[in-house]
Length: 274
Length: 144
Image (tube, rainbow over all chains, first blue to last red; front, side):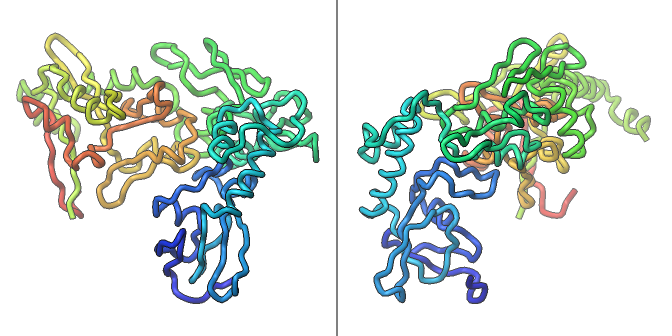
């Protein structure tokens, strides 16, 4: 791989000259230039993975004498003199195929149906999967869990049987119930429920932390509070009161200071504080 | 290079909530009114306090975020949430010791006061405050 040469240069995307820096990938540069490339498994919080294959673009260079390659924009590093096509016929062809396959896998997904329709695929030409669910196996949930939490979920088994799951299929012992996986899932496959003081996800029940002032459930589980306090090196007392109570107490303090101010007591208070 | 600081003087507040209205209208989208980042609380008889983000240095929300979606701009010192990076774990809404990180269930995202950086560079709440309870101070770079 090229490691020498200038740190920033121009590349061509769809006939437009666009500035790029060494170390960037095609997707980053295109997005910055306002050129849309569809993605499913991309998320800024995690490293690119290239599993959904939807961001395929055509890559070539002057000196490649007409040779062109189809590459994933999320992983392909930019280089000087690169010529990218994001909407050519061969790019559309490969995206149509990808969406055709995804439609066979997840015929009930709104997002997949909408994307497929955009590329002119309304019915899959493959055999539709029996008992389909909404998981496209992009692995975004497992990567977010790895980055933001505890790697409690992963893809399990192989081939046809590959699926996102928990150790031995049971309630995941390392899960902290942060809901990161559910919120980033592009198709909404991962479901959860918050009911009273209990949160249920991946077949495990979590107890929600309660506000130490008013007793209302916080949107964090007890395991999540322990995890965040440890990993982010934050005093657990920061994660014990709800926003309403925090706001009320800061307003009361500020109101008290304002009252002193009106009574001309602020100076004395400052002296007392010293 | 100077940065903005919002100055709150609660003894001037008359509880008119013009700040909340200005904020909600400024942060609306697609012709819809948004959620206010500023909350005016009643703390006594005719005593009101507008509570909004203090743009802390070493903020708890920045520290608690497990995906580094919340950052402080070193030049303007405004604490900013990167909505694309956020995984909606809600830790920041609890961690803020002043309750100034809000969650908008309609838009399904967290939001906080951005000092109207994307809306003309002058905080609208201060612009509409009739009593100068909320006002803006420019701080030169390097000053405390």
